[in-house]
Image (cartoon, rainbow, N blue to C red):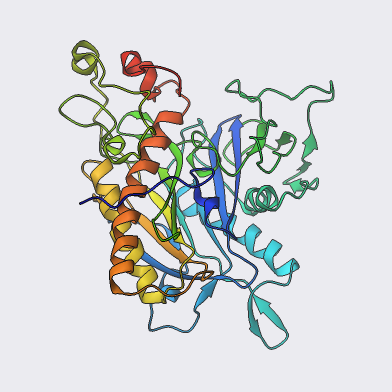
Amino acid sequence: MRLPMRPGATNSLVDVAGLRVGHARRVGGGHRTGTTVVLAPPDGAVAGVDVRGAAPGTRETELLDPRNLVERVHAVVLSGGSAFGLGAACGVMDRLADAGAGYPVAGGAVPIVPAAVIFDLGRGGAFRAVPDATLGAAAYDAATGSPPPLLPSGPEVFRRDGSSGEAPTTPDGAKPSVPAAGGVPASPSLEGAPAPDGGGRFTQTTAPPTVSGSVGAGTGAVAGGLAGGVGTASAVLPDGTTVAVLAVVNAAGSVLDPRDATLAGTRYGLPGEFDHLRPPSPEEAAAWNPDRTPAFNTTIGVVATDLTLTKAQCGKLAAVAHDGLARAIRPAHTMTDGDTVFGLATCARPAPGHDAFQDVLAAAADVFSRAVAHAVLAATGREGAPAYLDVFPSALRSRP
């Protein structure tokens, strides 16, 4: 029997009290990529990880083995840029060090910042147009609500755009500086130097913490031929425990139910969550024929709870979240995916008993499936990666 649950106040990862999320992206001039940071509470969060894909790009995952020393992390970075994008974590680490956060050692503290990346190289046109420490710092600033400084980038300097007093438009037509209700305001647009391999100047923007779609690490994502992106969802269990997920969906596999082309993850939606959708027409479903050329991909994410868990339990939480990934993406964990999920526990609530922990694990899988659906549903279409509702317009019953 399915456990009765309701979504949290924002149906996002920040429904786990104490967690903060920041997104930063670069679009234009050969760029289409970004970085997302999940900041832990000041004392850190207990963390585990589970890596299932055969082509992972990660940092500090071995440290999360329960046999190893450090119990808590101070942030998790999810980024585009393949292995190049791991450099974004350095910007987050610098910001945390400046704030005095980290594992205490003689002479100071070392921030613990695990990271994972997706493969989105070249999706904006320039292969080396990738996230770096500056973009990681911008994502951190978005999470904390800090205004971004003017930072150097190669021979040039970032400058604030929008001198007309109007929010500038990003290269794909989005207004970059409009916060969601109650969200952290997005920073002004920034314009930066060309990529190392000849890309032009880019526009750098941030996004509120609760949004899904083509933001942060999901900016250049593709999911089975459709536009992928960042998706987030949450659930509150009957005892008040919160379980929440943020996923970056960039899958080689399909996110569609093969029977009727509905988004597979919507099957696990909470009451009313996906009621504005219906199966698309058979004609639209039959016409969908995505490019099946083999490509590198990867779906990554964070699953979190406010319970007190051990590192081993956080690892199990991450492992079961992969079940939700596999329900929403078919196939998952392939040779060209680096599927990686981090599990976090803020320890604001007491440790669960056996049965209560079972309920948390079951919820984690369902919430991850829902987050995958939200990522694809909210993503902005572009050439070569159309939005779900652009391909299947009849699937929209009504506006949510």
